[in-house]
Image (cartoon, rainbow, N blue to C red; front, side):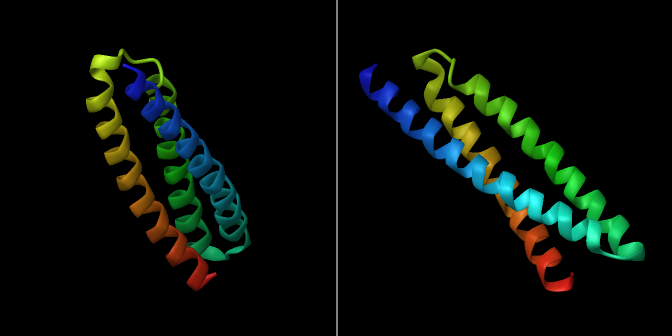
Length: 102
């Protein structure tokens, strides 16, 4: 299971770096949402809050993933990759909407 440990550690390090990057992006998005006016502010604030909640859920899932048994790691890592890809697509879309309009 040594290969699994390496994969797990690599993925954990990569995920931590991605989480740090998106934490900064979410902070920027929150600031832009706060700076918006009227209906746009409400919409952007709701979108950012929803992304933050999904991001927090992902972080919880990722934290649990590092403790799974080796025989469950393949499926767990695939689930984590899928969840991250889905979240990042939504986040990038929201980022693009927010940065071009605010």
